[in-house]
Image 1 (spheres, rainbow, N blue to C red):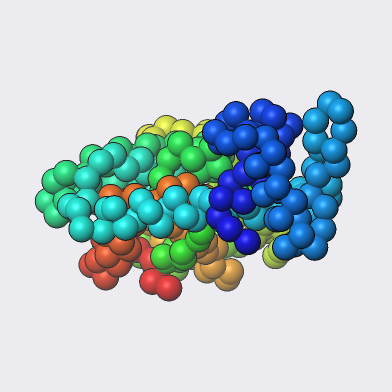
Image 2 (spheres, rainbow, N blue to C red):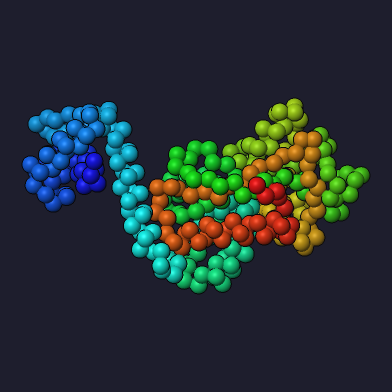
Length: 310
């Protein structure tokens, strides 16, 4: 099986006829017909059904089309990687972050990339996970951080850490006898008024799943999908909340909010670094990916990002 035969096959499948495919690849129609017949003989199966109106893929042809596109994409990636191997990493890298991850990671990552790779232009995009997943599938972003990867058809996933959710309160309205910093049981939150994201939000789904598993009711009096608004509402004493520490570091540093980890049970979630393996992986994107792992490990080691490395 030759690479040119695979290219011709894809051209025929996409054009719908031998004549159109021959024009696309720049060879005579009889030649492309001969190459197709040779490919079918090698594979031992018919790839197209011929008719006066053109060609239609057989079931075997449809399966081979997916594989053929993967092969051609891999060859292009290999050529691109070889060309870039001796070059200084340069160019734009688009990185998608959920808001809570962006708050703890985007600035130190941007500073590190700028210092180590001045020719890389990092674009950090802060968005909800649903949008980030769409952009990954569409190949409009190079990398993403996500809390869950369900629904992604094409994903190369690396688990970086796990973080535990915390209960948050204004310092002067702390509702428990134990001080902030001491663990609080999930059952202790049942009598408190909470503000949480809406039910479509990944964080809320995780909290709801955990509560159902232990038959625990929470009194949710306000739903907000804006992280900054949730924190502001809690700071004003209007409600309490449950969030990941990465999302609240700014308010805790200023002493505006205090927290305790939730136990019995703990509510934990993984943090993933994700890329679409079908998206061309530039040298710049590869270096940003590698640097991200290093920066995350440093943040966790220094307890700036409270979590457990995996």
